[in-house]
Image (cartoon, rainbow, N blue to C red; front, side, top):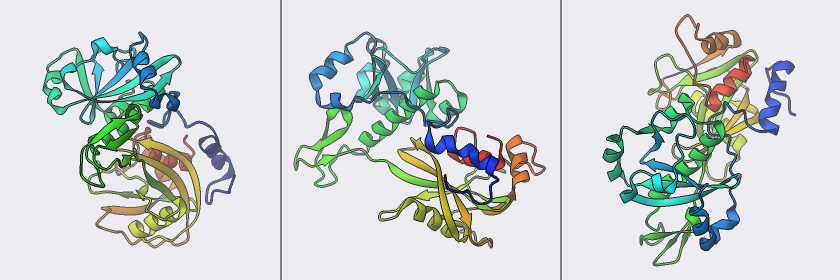
Length: 326
């Protein structure tokens, strides 16, 4: 593995499992045990049979929220077909894959169903951030939910053809839309985002956006642009947001992020300069923090009440690994 600049070897060794094996279960949405069984997407007869199987279950979404069985601890997000809420409001459904022999689908309800769902005391509507923070689901189920949420969001934004404007229809179990008019095919997309911790010896660079919670600092981040490598995006975003010249880049881990459909690519980048020039359109503040100060932030004992993102985020994992607390 490449040397990680500014991090002692014993701490750098902690990164290897992230880069070479499965993601840590504490990294939200990054664990998904489903066999996607993509070969079934083009077999509607087989899918119809699978959908009717007794073990088949559905994740149900309404807007940006998932529907849960209130007060149930065992698989609260999974519904059998005949118990799914909001049956009059069904829209798209996606075949996600199989968990063992049991098929998993994601079902979208029209927004008109929200009042009905909220009035049902046996149900709970919850956003995915709160879902991950509340640890209501297993890591594997949380990954499947993220898959379904991202796919259904794509459908809600692609009901019309980008080529000619005509309506599109769902094909291949929800993994493609086809234009009725010009036959253009449309496929789901994932937006790559770099999220990086800039290292200068025994300190790291953290910033805060204007909408962050009070005292909250995090890693810098930005979308990868067309014609750009991940490493170049890391260096560009570091320069644009903080005025810091980046050198060597080490990719550490990645995380599906269903808000709405991104892939967060975590990295460390070597600082080749240290004078900060903050882009005030992007950041409210940006500064260097010593490793010891970061440890206080992680422990919740910083004298100024400063903190970092929740452990479900890749930003937290980068910061924790830098501090040697992971």
